[in-house]
Amino acid sequence: MWHWALIAASLQTQAIPMEDLDLKAMVQEWGQPQKSRSVDGRPLSIGGVRFERGVGTHASSTLTVLADGKAVAFRAKVGVDDEVGTRGSVEFVVLKDGRAAWRSGVLRGGQPAKECQVSLQGAKTVELRVTDAGDGIDYDHADWAAASFEVLAGAKLRVVARPEEAPMKIASHRRDRTELHGPRIVGTTPGRPFLFRIPATGKSPLRFSANGLPEGLTLDPATGIVRGRVPKPGTYDVKVEVSGPAGKDRRTIRIVAGKGKLALTPPLGWNSWNVWGLSVSADKVRDAARAFVETGLAGHGYQYVNIDDGWEAGRAPDGEVLCNEKFPDMKALADEVHALGLKLGIYSSPGPKTCGGYEGSYRHELQDARTYAKWGIDYLKYDWCSYGQIAKDGSLVELQKPYKVMREALDSVDRDIVYSLCQYGMGDVWKWGNLVGGDLWRTTGDITDTWGSMSGIGFAQGKIAKYAGPSGWNDPDMLVVGMVGWGPSVRPNRLTKNEQITHISLWAMLAAPFLIGCDLTKLDEFTKDLLMNHEILEIQQDPLGKPPVQRDLGDGTEVWTRRLWDGTIAVALFNRNFAAKEVAVSWSSIGVQGSPRVLDCWRRKDLGRVPNGLRQRVPGHGALVFKVGTPKPAW
Ligand code: GLA
Image (cartoon, rainbow, N blue to C red; front, side):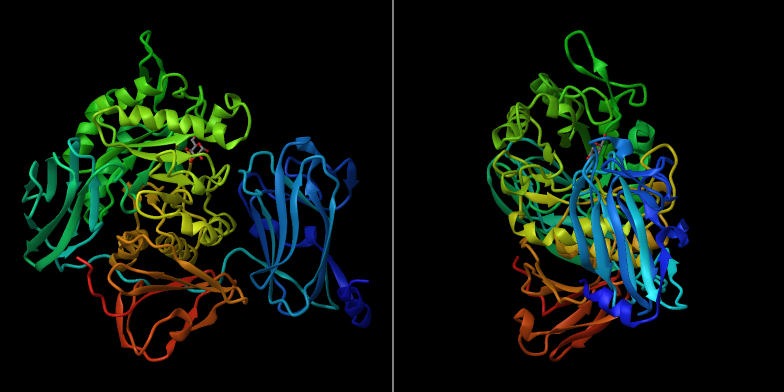
């Protein structure tokens, strides 16, 4: 007998069927939640068994219920709806105050319903979640059948859409003071074209100077753009100074000329997918590049302007890949982007077709690499997609093969092209992405702008973070901040502000690429403040690229720490609960001695010397990030 049943028997309780709750606030990634119907509007059916009542949803989905200690239990029969046959795979999770209290394990189409019975004793909030089980949301029609809450007699359950907390105030990115930002270490292959815009902000006009530039490079003092070719391998410490009406700033930027040095820090840039989907065009890319300069993103170190799927047409008779009518002249577009000191990225698949059904590189790898080099492409996202039809099986040899082929092709051209593997983490790519010559590799399926998706991906990355580092980064997918849309029309982001702060804090602590996925011509102040916080970017771009240490405090809060190159420690406090919580961390527990200096990064506030440790209120679904210690720059 379940202990909740014993409790229920001794109390006066009543049942509230899940379908009687207000489902408008249920967040899901496809379709609408249905009362006693599947997501496609058919009678609920799992493993050939019909259910009269319940809720039909689609992964990833979350229903958040305020129980206020008045719920006793939840029970349901869960599974993939029969309307998708044997396709679809999901996991059902019931969370009590932010922590998983019950998991179904992965359930697939056609399997019988799994019985869910969870005690909810004492729970303030309950979340009913359906995840995509890590393989994307296709066909993930999920049923909470015969689902009901057992509550104390007379108790009501309230469904809430979002944390009700006020967003945390973060520092403005705007400041007059002259300031240098961005990577402190950049790489190039000897003899190949080099382009780097020294990131700086402040009251204009700014003037740049550099001491110790390697032979072959020249700096434009008005724009801070460095160009040329470094003929010889080596490490060059360049003393950079920027001055303007609001002062001066200096730092040493290390230029490393060698093989495989293109991503010494995780890439900073933009990618068209999360905003434009397949409707990307040259005009939209040009607008994004201009916005890099106008908004200050370029001044903060963002440099890659990446075109995702949707630029390709077929092939010319000689096999050369063609651009569709939305990209009338790729070389001219690259030239424009380069004139701004920025870089242009492109997308393809090792399969015959891309995920969007466009031309892939299968059997044209070398020719495509040459075409990219001719156009002036600086970054390639190479997406598995239809290669599944070519691969003989799911063995490591087969998973790696197409990535090796393109690596060889890229090596043979006279151009530095960052190589981004995209195969959703298959075969634990983090263990071998570097061996096949990747500069970064996607570790997950596609992200979307829901708390379930973003936090599910982000918090799970801590355990594989040790595989990432300079020249080989884990890529938990592109940022979901600002106006997104995955198609021709954009809409506001569904993550709350506090959730977006968590998103950027997680990605920064993970040293994950920051590839913005929103409409840069419609950046609001908050999104700019999120993306252009100097301290947060310093953590994300830290030259050591050390993995973070993730500590789960067991109450829905987590403390993450990471050693930085200047001897300081980045400390992030996360609260996965729906409600605010105090999070405490003692210096001794994270190996810090004495009373270190502490900087509150999001608020850009110097807290002075702090004894013992930190005790801070962290908003629900929110995060705080601190830099602890006195910086002693390593160069
Ligand atoms: C896959 C990738 C996405 C995007 C699309 C384009 O889904 O994971 O990031 O590139 O393909 O079709």
